Length: 122
Image 1 (cartoon, rainbow, N blue to C red):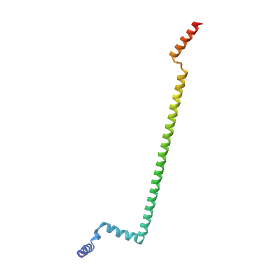
Image 2 (cartoon, helix red, strand yellow):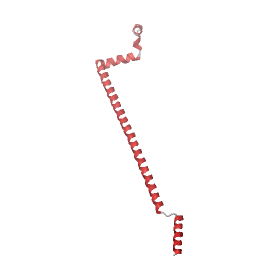
Image 3 (tube, rainbow, N blue to C red):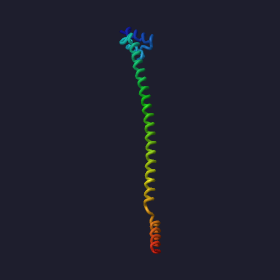
Image 4 (cartoon, one colour):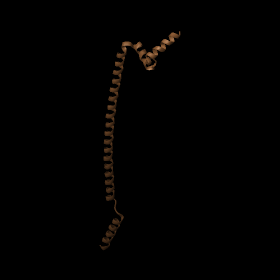
């Protein structure tokens, strides 16, 4: 039994990487997958590239939507400012019309005095 333990130690000393966990994992992968590992790696790379391409497409779509939303917000803001200006103009015009229709008390008083004077002269 001692020779068995010694031979394992001799193998580890001859190949120090055998105790490395990553080397053990690679050895297990080669035993399980064998020649198919290259095919699996290729498929994984294809899937990874497909995911990256779709991610890029989604990022582009998000950027397009963001640009469109910003443009729509700008258009709405411009339209709102135009409508507010139109409302202000309409309110000012209505107020001017009311001022013209409303008779000033002083002016009315002067007209009544003038009318009274004219009536008194006749």
